[in-house]
Amino acid sequence: MSRFWSPSIQSLVPYTPGEQPQVEGLIKLNTNENPYPPAPAVRDVLDQFDTSRLRLYPDPESAQLKQSLAHTHGLNTYQVFIGNGSDEVLALTFMALLRQDKPLLLPETTYSFYNVYIDLYGIEARHIELTDDFRIDLSQYQQPNGGIIFANPNAPTGISVPLSEIRALLESNTDSVVVVDEAYVDFGAESATALIEQYPNLLVTQTFSKSRSLAGLRIGCAFGHADLIEALERVKNSFNSYPLDMLAQAVAVASLEDENYFRSRLDQVIATREWTNEQLQTLGFEVLPSHTNFVFASHPNVSGAELMAYLRENKILVRHFTKPRIENHLRITIGTDDEMQALINCLQQHPKL
Image 1 (cartoon, helix red, strand yellow):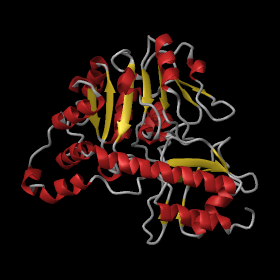
Image 2 (cartoon, helix red, strand yellow; image 1 turned 60 degrees about the vertical axis):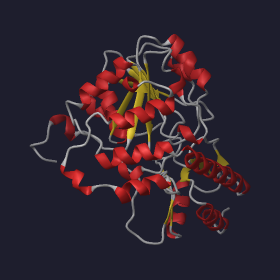
Image 3 (cartoon, helix red, strand yellow; image 1 turned 180 degrees about the vertical axis):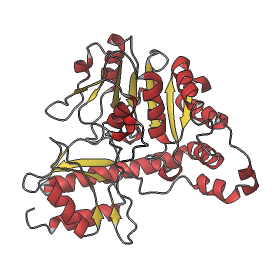
């Protein structure tokens, strides 16, 4: 710690990303990356890209990508915001919309980056416990607030909230922004983008990192009423007017144009997820219902820490959290069929299973 640091930074606890090992031969099931490559058109864009264009700045408005996203979701371009990964979109959202006089409401167990933003921006927050079966109960959010944010499906649990419950919340909570973080929505949940035209206080964030296999290019977006999007644009242009490079913009557009490939890969991941659920349950694991590209599982006979260490020794990486109530769970990314078979084969050899 340096005496030159700003006071607010001295107590800040940064987000800890999942391990990105520099070791060959590991089966990497710890950061929820898609096991399959992006759409074939992405390679075509990269192969044909005119590198002489790199001397120029990219389009600061990402206009073509906004048009593609608006068309995909049945919206107008003024209802679309583009950012450098959904984490940046969320960071701008916290700054632009969620710093209010009343407390921000969010789940106690959820994406841990939210608490980093809360500390960074000095936001008063009230954390609401999940139900006994690890679900978000939106009826508990019917209280005075300066904003509401939750991931749907939630992370790290993987459980989704039905669209009807989100609608009910929006009907009753009309005086503050409701942010629905849909990083994993494509793997089986219902998207709240269908509600944007009806509710001017709804903001939905999404990412190209998971379902579209583009984690390496950092492409995020948000959808909402024009007034909410304008707030995000104001903050973006006060921070970084060029958040998305021209390669990322071109690749994102290409990925949106191949719907058949997108759906086929989603179906493949979902089928593998369901097979993995069944195999883990056969081994005695308790697995929460998932609408994501990961499963959240615990075993009554073995701690999460012990299982993580055992898998690591056998060159399989999974994610373990030390937070109370979930410290015995593992978050296991869905990989290829061969990778998940290797995981099950390894667990079958554990002496306590």
